[in-house]
Image (cartoon, rainbow, N blue to C red; front, side, top):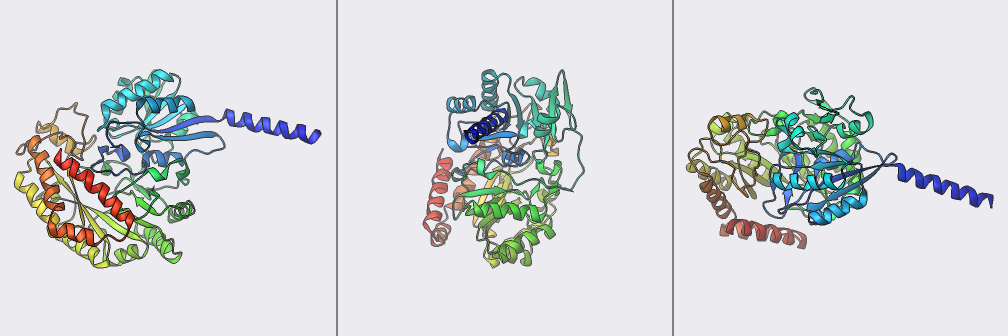
Length: 483
């Protein structure tokens, strides 16, 4: 009888402990489109792809299960509408929400978070998003529902806000009584250690990317931001940080145990710190990790030795930021490499047997129709396996935005934008917004609907998963071109 009583008392204590945990919700809001609000670079999915939301994923690493009851709601991945999402939030009753917010979905996101705050008025909402980086102190006052702006999701600002009540906060602009406080800026190129993100909170089966050869997939971030000075990109204005090889390896081992088949390394530039990546890749090779993966990098970062190591470690595709076919634009916007280097990198990558995707940018101030067509010609010349044609958008806190405002291409208060081109934010001064939309569709048609290219893609399919992935992507790409 005594043992039974003690057991009941322990059960009651455990139950109380669970009930006393602070509830924190990591939230990707619903939307009318497949919005990708990640990494201060929101956009509409051009086809059918949807990566794991890396802002939220990284933030989960700072919280522990002993003190917090954690939940992820990714309404985009789950295909939930506003009503369903609100119902799920109310059921969980979070005290804090760490959410995503994007310029591509700005108006929808504002309406959604207003509904959340109206429904749960005592809940504190902190958001990460591109549009929030510009004049953060003003925006946090303008949005009554917003309690904090995450200016660096690689820092534990939200956790510190919850635990410290406004003292020693990193990477967060937040409200405190009648004031708005900003955390101090950090040092550039600082090594950091974070705990392993809580991948188990996410429904990995819901995430998808082009070219994936096996599911489920997961996202891994080995470094934050980018040390290169490209002026059209927000990443050069963020505080670059890199994790240790040991930390990355620990995460990869955990993902292997979870049954993950494919990894999307969402670093802005993979192999930025060679010593770290050499150690990680050597571990993947020697331990026969057996996970396939893809990444972003730069043409001036890669050489044959690194490419061979990546291939042995399971790399399937590298996405290179090519951007333009003219040296003048590569120089003007500080890409710091040449067209010859682009051609060399694509040739080397093909030689070692890794597929190549090139990203190309159209719509910069002063760019002509001929310049856009020259870029398309380069995409075909370098024999890219895949091409992504994006439309320039004047991101907050970039000199590119300042240039667009100075030339009268956008208004100072322009906030809604989408680089994937579902709508065009500005013309170039020589090419109108309407003409850019047509040029973008033309680029996709001319690149992907070449008979030789189609035959090559079909011949290269290795399994049913690749066929399904290509079929989905092809369908949505065709749909976007036709509309």
